[in-house]
Length: 277
Image (cartoon, rainbow, N blue to C red; front, top):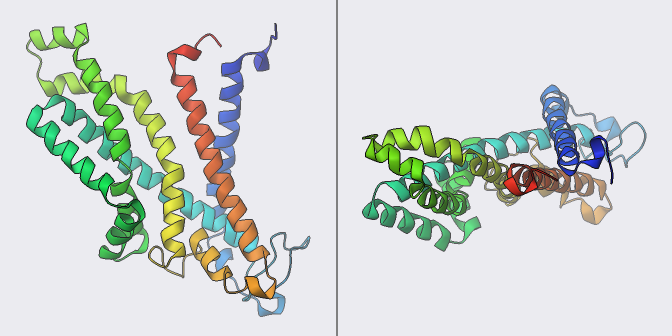
């Protein structure tokens, strides 16, 4: 039998989760420090391939692609986290009131969920973003309003089960109102599902933000987001400047995978079945 810190499966998951969080946090902090450096142009060094001085090469305006990539990723992570938090909050609200407030509220919420899920995801996201003037506000609002239905249904099912719990029944017989029961008894129980759902929403949020920005319906071209970098690089791939798209694309995939793995590890850590692993 394996012993020690790494012999325990939960401890290994916690260790890996901490490493991934530190890596993603490092990208965010690094990106904030590079806000001005990402805008610096120098035509004397334009179109340089990857080298020791410029690990990701430079673009047609002499901008350091490593700096732009890190800055773009930090911006995308910020937008993804903000969108995921808002979306998960909407899911928690609708999922809870749907199961608690009676049949007509339940029917109304389920109708809204069916409506949102019935419209092609990327199309609805594009329409919301364009209607709100694109930019950070339009993208965040669009992503937040299109990613909550699945989590809301999961929370609704959990609340329906909670309503049958003895302590919930006793609280009701003692005269406690629905608001009190939701705040004191249901929300604490729903927090693990809420946190895991929030983390798992993020990969979808950051990919959709990059997608609509790539298509020209997201962030403005002045902002060094990953979608902007990839969109601009498409014009130069035919001339052999492959590094303009490869490195930003690989790092975007890496960030998305890290958040997905973090969410899965968090879900397993919060699962009662893994307590003794």
